[in-house]
Amino acid sequence: MVAGAVVGTTVITKSASATTFPDWFCKIVPGLCSAPGGGNGGGGNCFARGTQILTREGYRPIETLVAGDEVAVRGGFAPIKAVVSHTLNSASGKWVGESNLPVLIRRGALGRNSPSADLCVTALHAVYVDGFLMPVGELVNGTSIIFEEVNGRGTLDFFNIELESHDILDVQGALCESLYGAETERCAPLLRFTGGRSELRSRLRSVASVVVDRRQPIDIIRDKLEERGLDLVRAA
Image (cartoon, rainbow, N blue to C red; front, side, top):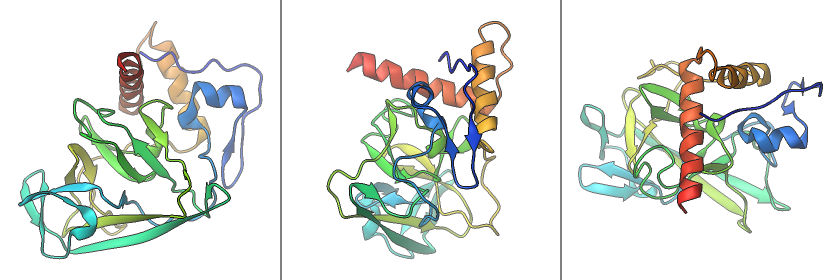
């Protein structure tokens, strides 16, 4: 179990656009802090160019898929209704005008060979873990799940797959949601924090669990993946 944060008298404030934390706190719980280079807006919940999606013909890069192609879902295969895309730009070494920033999920971060290779998605995109959907940006842990740096790139292209109904895709061996619309019924319960205080309470439940375990599913999933991230670092 990951120990979590010890909170002293430092004031933690939340503005309309972001939550601000002291540097020492962000080093302990990076997932609780604002993403680097963030802002408002966002181009959607998507996968980076080159992401491999399991189809009836095997894994294919997402940018090669078109409407009518069949992709693997939990119940077998389903035809694609549409493929949507957007481009994220950078300037001065930061992603421009984005709060839905790219997140890198390292190989094996979600489980054995899940994903089977490093996977880049936007922060609001949900992964499917232990029967729940959870935005990957809320699982950033500084080891196996991290914010994707610009690294000299001027742009980064993203794509997503719309099906007739919301479902789970096989994405490089990881289970991730298809495109979700507000009018669509979710295929699984969504877990997410409602702000800095919500995540802080979660951290405190994790700290207290060594005495009395009252963690909720959202805490358990986050703690488990953080533990796995540390294990992967130690094994490297």
